[in-house]
Length: 220
Image (tube, rainbow, N blue to C red; front, side, top):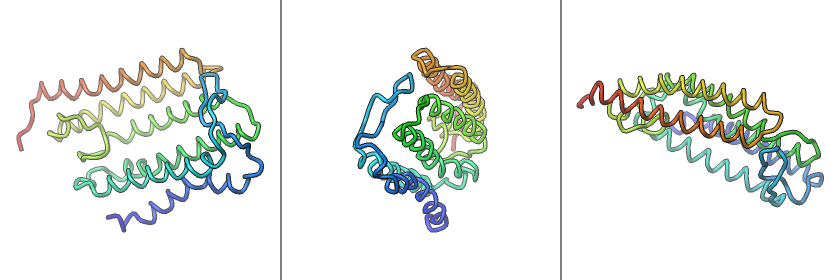
């Protein structure tokens, strides 16, 4: 299975490392201290060394990517995941790498904009994509909403993921709206997003449990 997806693993891994290549090419133009964390206002409030930002962070992202993909591909029920959810899994970290480093490099080179809003909007789009594809994901051990009740019953799994998909889409739309309406990524926007995240997780788990109570666990 790993051999089948090896070309995709290599391509997605190279995408993760693209920011490293950019950083090495423009090494002399980048400051010694690179922005690594941004506050609610979108201004940098945390810094790391140029070497750590350009070389260290991409390598950490690459390691996380390879680990997540490898664990998923050795899942005995990996065929149930579905093509689109699996494709999304392959491109989540590469996408995050491009978005985060584009913002980081732009800020480091003197282009000022609210980085937090960009990241927040991108997160909302990711949630919408995830919400659309969750219902297409079959029962497996590594990807999806893995409550104990859903893992023990395929009907519960399907129902939970249909419900969870709607929740993620709603949450994603809310996140994008908050990003677009906020002139600055204020504490209020952050708190609202965190509350919505918690409520979404709780609602999905409660739904899975209620389904289990109403329909019972199907014995194998």
